[in-house]
Image (cartoon, rainbow, N blue to C red):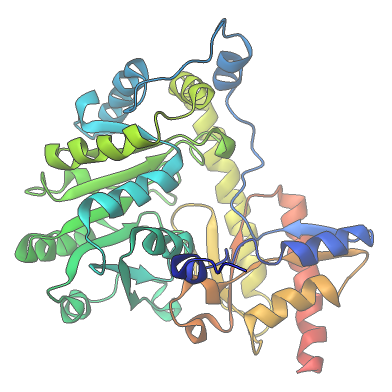
Length: 398
């Protein structure tokens, strides 16, 4: 039998989805599962986006422009300008989700075996994109004890070699919910200019910033016109993950021209996704006010309940809708699997994402899990109560 490629063997499975078979078997037994494992918002997609798809009068779903529909790019540029990012439609290339934006950025800006420095824990799929692009991620550990703040710049500089071509951050961060400040980003900008690197920023959670804190885009850092590449998506902003529409935004013309060639090879972004995304820009401010208030309440409920459990520590995240907590357990992978295979409380259990999958060294996340507060408050309350009972039972097991 022919063997698969070495790249296929290196491609990592999703740590977020690998427990799905266990969850499916639990559901077959009639057990209710509270899904805290995945960032799928339960809040409604804006009506303007849904109506644009329902009421369109297309007679042919034809190919679009490889860079994305012109009308959408122009409208998206107005959105960025509204939030204080001064770009034109010519600085934007639409992608098939934020995932493709990251993959294109890797392939355009780095050669095989080049390195990109990423603070960890980081979004696990960065590993898969790196394998596809043939590049290497050099992780730099941030600590739950410091609430996952940006590691000292000296630590970044220690990792820089001749192979280093970029630094990648997610802001606000997935999986930790940490929001990098302007001061932290300016420290990165200093390094980027000193060593002439690219600075990638995954800014898909821009709208989700709490406690009066504001998001600061890397596109507003001075002197990084050729270095800064922002990666974006409509998935979380408008609760439309299935639309699969993202964007690369940069003032670097060479990067945009090269990215267009990759975009031409995949022809064009999704037609209906772009229709929905373009319409979604007209979402009223009242929608975002509702979303903000709901997530703040969910966050506070989850974090406070977690911290009331003996042996659990959970920082208060300032952005996104995730948090990483440490638990009095021996192994987060085993614990999360056990929750689905051997535990139930009042006919229910909890599904979380082991944090080991968000670190390059699984040992760093051995007693940590990522939780997403994307469920209604009553479900979060029941889920954490269930988790508290599970931890008591598990402590007797170990």
